[in-house]
Amino acid sequence: MVYASRLKPSSRLRLTFLLLGVSLLSACSGSPSGPAPLGTTTPIPLPAPTLTLGADSLLVDSTGSATVPVQVNRAADHFTVSDLPNGMQGSVAGGVLSITTQNVAIGNYALTVSGKWGEMKLMVPLTVTVKVPRVGNPGTTTTPPAPDFTLRLAVPSLTIPTGQRASANIILQGNSTYTGGVTLTATSSPAGLKTTVIGTSLNVDTSGASAGQYSVTLTGVMGSVNHTVTLPVNVGTQVGSSGYQWYAGTDRPANADELEVLRLTNEARAKGANCGGTVYAPTTPLTWNDQLAHAARNHATDMVMQNYFDHTSPGGLTFGDRIKAAGYVGRTSAENIAAGYPSAQVVVTNWVNSPHHCEILMGRDLKELGVGSVTIPGSLYSIYWVQDFAAR
Image (cartoon, rainbow, N blue to C red):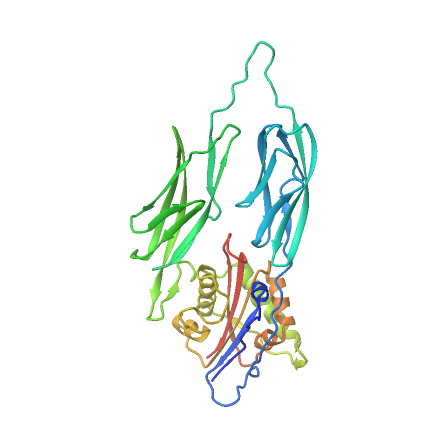
């Protein structure tokens, strides 16, 4: 019998803040001997977004440009820069705030940088000091620098299932004499990936490509100036008719965050818990299982790569299917998922404070645990957590 809670927010806004999911699969018939069948649960909001700048002030020529890093804990819907004087422009792209000036009067200007996450808006101040351009000594001339640019990508690598597509944002910044005109091209090594550049997006299509490691080189050319940046791409393998993907590296040894989740889970089990009014007495600790961890890590990675948040993959595989495919054969299994929480302590605390997740975590019939902690910069929530429980 399958027991599951399905989180179905009634609006797009609530879906944006979907954080935790819980589901239970029991191999026995009748009433389960572990946690009770689960009903509908209320989504726990994501941690509040944060917005900071790499500096609280900038110095720029009356005609010139300057940049400052923009740091957020999860992707914003959009950014705005307000209180700009005449001749000054500001924009945020690829984690960088760019300020450009054209004949702006000398002085100090107080700007406001804003980020929006659904209905939530955060604002931070930025002081821009416009100065007189430096000139050479009398009797000499100052030669402006030759036009140049820097080229980088918003993510360090991509992992893509076979037959799927993904993209990486291109960050191109020019120097003070840059006027545009960069031509961007991309190539794959070895051949097999289809690469295109559209605007500021590098697109990679794995249709027809074999599973394995690839390298995509992005080249920018402006006259005699050219720069390149390399993007490692891992193409995952496909398993079974469901189309479910197993990603390279998800069978790695446990990292410190994953083992900390195990420790904190066992700490909670040893104390006992009140799960939404149902008191659970202290129970036995869980032992680590690498097969369960493989299933958990791969599911966390798959949620990022296919842009979903659920216990069931787009191809229809449940967590029980994934656990079995990872090589674990047992009589009962369960799963907790979460996204956006920055540490093992925070995510376990929130699982314990959520009644249905707490019921799973305290289940007496569950004996083994595998944890997946996957961080992929540039993804919607950046960090994803999965607990896969089971017993033989």
